[in-house]
Image 1 (cartoon, rainbow, N blue to C red):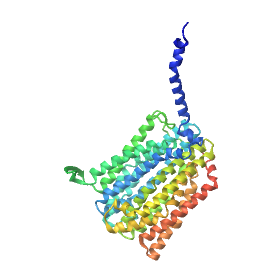
Image 2: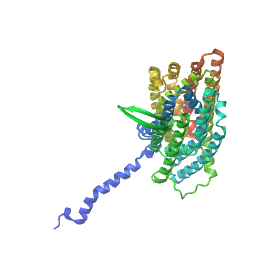
Image 3: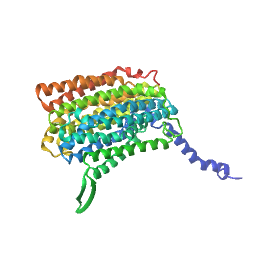
Image 4: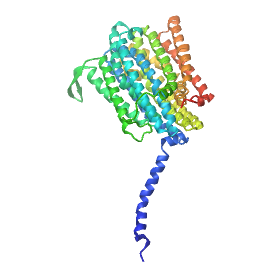
Length: 497
């Protein structure tokens, strides 16, 4: 009699057991993936951090592009710093217009992923890509033609007008890949993949730093660890910084496009054989959600440009201190933007799955994390502002003003957490009109009007201008929280998907 364990059939069943168990484990892992955790309300703060930490790192990388440009150009003097600083409002306006497509794509992709509609998510991604390419071409033509006029409109001083115009024109040449990178980052986030945009921004920084190193400065000799090296350089100054940034955008846009083509596991996966003809229905859906966000960014960006124009009347030193303080502060709230990006995906997917209670739960967890982060940022800004400013400049006059500015804005950080995180949550719900309304009230009704009175009525200088910014941020934080508490955001997208 043959023992059971020597029976070939029994032996196959026994040997096959690990493979069957492994297959079951893989199936369970697939069913309990991140997107399943999102739409089933599992994981609490852990789910928020799984989405947020790559976005946090990504936003830090985005800010580091500005940091590196500012720090390296800053070695050329206050005039070069002011030229780059004056160019920033135009880049904000251009990027703000692109938000109409990027946010609309993110929200619609998240909705379709939550509803398990991968083919629709892919269709949205393709339409967003062609919209971004078209807008990129228009933006490039505009900046090339208006590059010399824009610095004048922003109040550029004669000594840095030409550098500012050069930076704007070169930046414009990279708009098509830049817009592609912005849009595809939004598509990946909508699918719950925040790591790919993070990797893209790591590449951007590496390319930007290397490009700056060789393009900004002339050929020179430098000594490292006792060894003298001959470093070749183009010596293009501000133009070199702009060129490096534009080329980095080219690399990033191409990288994200190839990944979406090759990554078949992504719910929004695309192929070159699919249709890229404009689809009026999808374009309308994207713009219905995205245009209020673009208008919001436009209102804020134009307001920031006008705000900088008011600051520029206080002199080159005040303008340089303002720009450096803005860059220094931005690194402190980058983690909170990560929670905001996570909230957009979380809310969008949960509402797509018809589970608004989980959307509220995830967003509240993101908000708590943002408040804690911004409170820590407030302490840092108030306690060591000089350390942050010295990273960019050794100019004692710029340092003295910048330290005061950072200490003033430290008091706005906790309220800013409400504004930043809940902006993302409302976008995920498709409730993009209210952030637009709130931005009008805060930026123009409070910041600009108050700043004008403070500068021309009281003569408090750039420090007074930042007091108006403090009041604006606190008011917007309160208004965003009031909108979130109303729960009306749950019904913002009825009939648009």
